[in-house]
Length: 319
Image 1 (cartoon, rainbow, N blue to C red):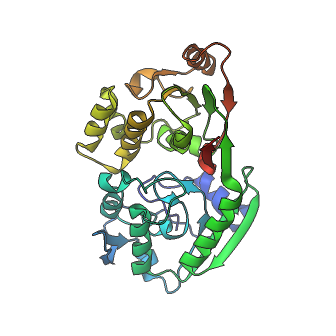
Image 2 (image 1 turned 90 degrees about the vertical axis):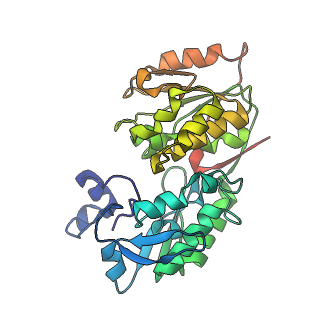
């Protein structure tokens, strides 16, 4: 079962990547958070009513497996996340991702202790029951840096502990940071935003960021764009809170990023018409060259430029 959460089902091409060519005869099911046969297993202390995938609910032995990297509001991916949001209902995901949870100061990359989003996920995983967990830690090039197996929480924490040894990155002062999420997060704009959120600890009012991404599948949810009919951070946040849905979580986080840092973001993607993005960015273009020229115009003469790909796989810190 692919723990898609509220995201789309995997394609046939992605199935081959997940299973490998030798295992294509295995049955692979994409979780549907809106399916009509989800099974109720209980309610967490945070009030999240947990309904889960019916196939998983009937399983006599339950194994979760996947990679562990920093996450923009859950602290780290992996482990408990494969239950909530992975195989949970849309209602449960929305309750876990609700604004008062996401806007907690503890709901940030690299933070697990006191993080309400992560703690709710842990409670959901405990309610459901996982028998074995396989957590993969990777280097920036995708090669294996460690595999941790065993009980859900202990193996996940062992992976997190190992990951912390080499993902903290000292970021020198820069006038312009050029970044991209890389594959697979360059699939759409929603996922690409993770690179921007990861940089928040090193951003300030004088910072300029050039974010570029292929976004081959477009935006990733039109509701994310609606709050950017406004340009002021407070108005963006208020619009994101109105008729809140899961895909607005990144609009909410971007509005908070603009309010707290004052960063100026320039965006480039060959797949997206700048006109559809509203006031999401200071400037947007389908040309990386045009976007770079504009970003440089926001910087002082002889700017310090930092190229920082895939920052979401690290924990940046200013020096």
